[in-house]
Image 1 (cartoon, rainbow, N blue to C red):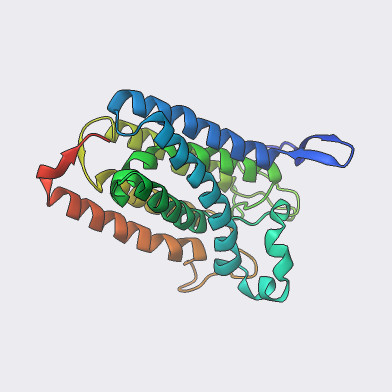
Image 2: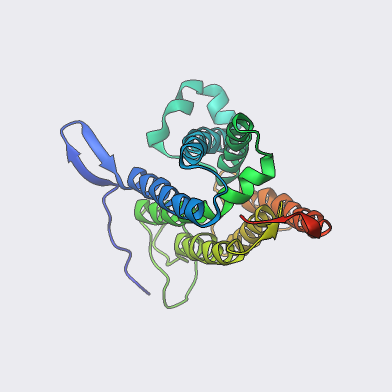
Length: 264
């Protein structure tokens, strides 16, 4: 068993002002997207720097608002219906990837329309920039000691504060490795060559859905939700299965029109 490092949730505090690790992870994710996006512009000339700056700005607002509202509606609708003002309390935690994805999709559709770009043209360009943010976000979950895994006896198990005395899977690190690092490597390599429209988006949806479903077998389900069906289906799985199906459909549609290959 490994010892869980006792992180303070605050990187530093100055009087009433605190800089939290989780917020820093979001900033690192946005910074990585900015650097990688500019590199893709230089390689493929798909968007201008000004256009990409707009896409990124829209995306930042989309992911923050979407992730928060997604958590509210997918995970604790009854609580926030009774306490609507707390929806704005982002510092209390509670962000959903699936809500963030919907927010980004809407934001990219709106931003792309400004430049006469199709929805999937924009999404195919932006998809490889998302996994680094997932990587840093899961590291933030680990630092906060939240979203831990199930009880286990594997040698790398950890006892998380607030999770009881038994060692658990560090499932946050599994997600960082798969949904973050591995998915980024796959998407970056795949999108480095001309691909049909919708193909890169399809690989992202399929890859994330499969990786997340796999990790859900090791992650402790939300206490107020438990398992939704069959003693193993979690909310995360239920939200990812449509992503897997969508990814397959997008790839089928993309490669059914092979003449539409373009650089992403």
